[in-house]
Image (cartoon, each protein chain N blue to C red):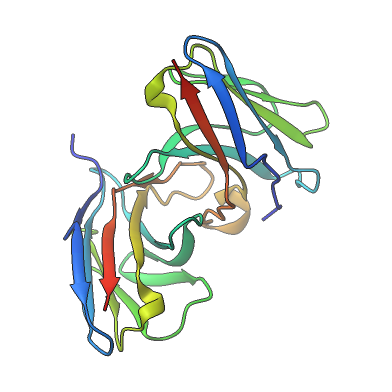
Length: 114
Length: 115
């Protein structure tokens, strides 16, 4: 699976949008971009994933650049409960590998302040 | 609809002992993966079970073994415990359908401390 690069930490004011970047310059055409977050003392929580197109769900939006070498996770209105470590992961789709797992890096620690 | 459940939540063992951790997958899921998370690090993949067989394994020694039961629940066994095995052990479940990209859903883990 391709390696990802994320800033170690970011700050965001409550109510503002949090934009978390991820670089995956060696991503292959069959690799998806996944985002998970981990709140202290809990297991990782799935947020969103995408292949080429931008994606949006009730939690966040995922913007993938046209060349797919980077992406941005957007939390539109951050709350204190969004304070967590955010992991950007790329992985091969099951169609090509039969099965696939997640390779976590160290992620970005997002601190949302009042 | 219950999510992924793991037991116990906390466990203390001494060096050389053996431990068994348990996981019940999210309803409708048939694939279980286990991860080890050391303090301050991201989770590291141990192995994955599907149809009661180990089908992929990470870089972990044979002291780590597992099992999946017909109801899709799973166990992680660790023998001859070392101090370095102290970590949060996470179970994740998913639907193992080839051709469909399905996210893994995690439990809150078992905190294992080795004295």
